[in-house]
Length: 104
Image 1 (tube, helix red, strand yellow):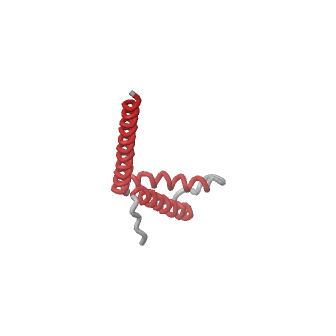
Image 2 (cartoon, rainbow, N blue to C red):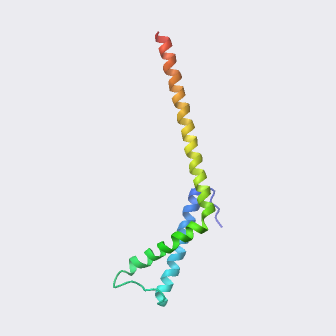
Image 3 (cartoon, rainbow, N blue to C red):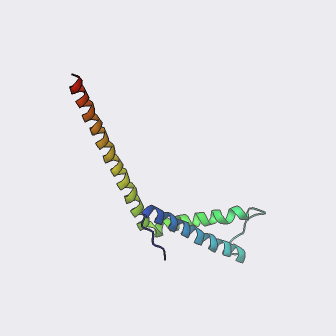
């Protein structure tokens, strides 16, 4: 089994897996006649849309932990970028102040 360390990639792959699982189940149910397979040539759109509608709440419930880990990763990256920006701004301010002192 492949282990993915990146929370965002892990969530995305698991979300895709839930969707593909729902797609297979909906397709099998359509073949069995349990759910309608579409009207005319709309089968190519009906089955994936139904799988998407089913997989969304399932992912919301089943992947809560992965979604929380992903949001922590994104929030940490945002905070790190903010700290770097502040550090760069303070370095620029110090350089500007030094240039003013040297000129004055």
